[in-house]
Image (spheres, rainbow, N blue to C red):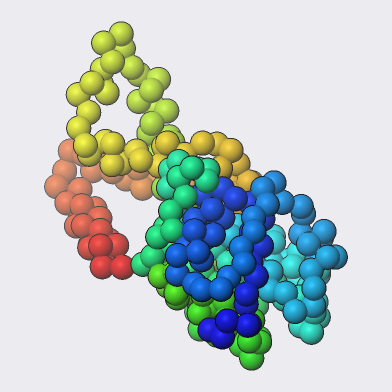
Length: 269
């Protein structure tokens, strides 16, 4: 990236993600002026004050609502340009105290393309084709930002806002709620000796790592992806019912086989 194209970065929200992004820029880019503000103003306020050459991006965990707002607030491609983004990186502990310059390395960084094919409503019939290029791929601001992501070690992936919310609903938000459900279930059953937790091994700690995330981090995520999460929880509950019915048979082996295959896929990413 040419040093003159993006030389100043303002980060609104200096928590884990914002703080880590600032540290990554400091570590992997040169001649970059970086400043950060906590508790940022709303998007309309940003749209009113951003200079025409600015690139505005976000790191929100859901994209549909903010993409809709951005379409209204940033309609002119000759003015400030909004590029939706979501780094698929994080930790169970929030806050700038846990920020890390290498948080994004080898992790996917979702970028929202306005031209991507919408996802069909309903979890059971979803078929989508992620867009490989943004609608405004001629805009040098986008190319410059993608190069920054590559410099800090992230792996950019273009897709639509609805595609994104569906995918993270299943791959990120549902696992979080499942961990919360299991952890609260076990907590309610602790006895005076700490059982069953006193007999827990590393497997339970690994399974419940996400349970350490505070509700304040997830409140808006859940509220802005209710439709996907509600349908996903219904389908997941049915799968748990299926597992219960298979406890007395060898049919459970097929579920373990499928789980093992998915684990291999995750290890290969």
